[in-house]
Image 1: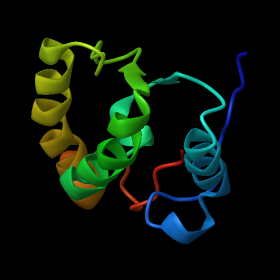
Image 2: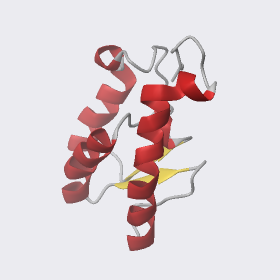
Image 3: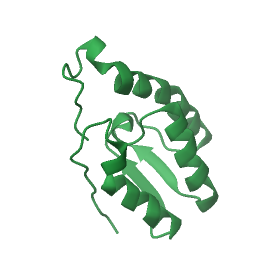
Image 4: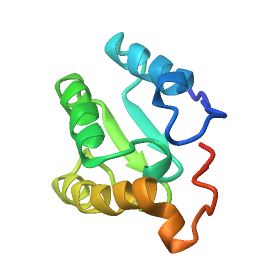
Length: 109
């Protein structure tokens, strides 16, 4: 089964990320075994968010993959890569305007 989820809210609007919340709920029901995201910083917003997400998904044997960064949490190397990439993703989320990534502080999901 393949399903696409997209949130049309700003990065700081974690409360209204209904597609992400739906994904989390369905993961607990074990309706799938893998989550593929386009880019890490479009899914998790901080190192803590990454850790919390994996704490839910690991016991369910749910794989987490990224097309852009190429990590796959079903492998040891993929888990290491995810943790290494979580910090720059948080930096971009919190301070993206410093790097000219999104000058108005808005970064669509």
